[in-house]
Amino acid sequence: MLTQGYPPLLTVSQASDLTGMSKKYLNKLRKSGTVRVYTMLGGYHRFYRDDLVEHLGLKEDNNGRRTS
Image 1 (cartoon, rainbow, N blue to C red):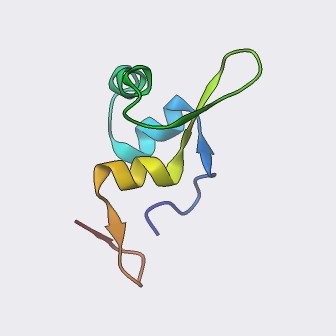
Image 2 (image 1 turned 90 degrees about the vertical axis):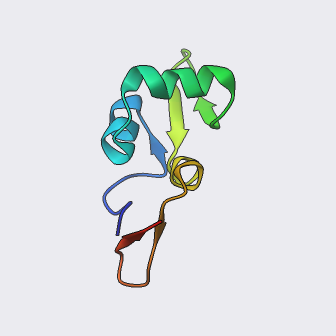
């Protein structure tokens, strides 16, 4: 699966690995409110994995292969 091995809440590094987007661009999306994030105690942010996949329009078929 595309998201196999990734937890539901992603650090910016994990989100970057999953999406192929730069950390800087992901933080830009976060600050603009384009993608939903969870703000942890201390101000750390986690990206919702499923929201990132949906935002990118990435889908998986039943065999775990990525489709567009």
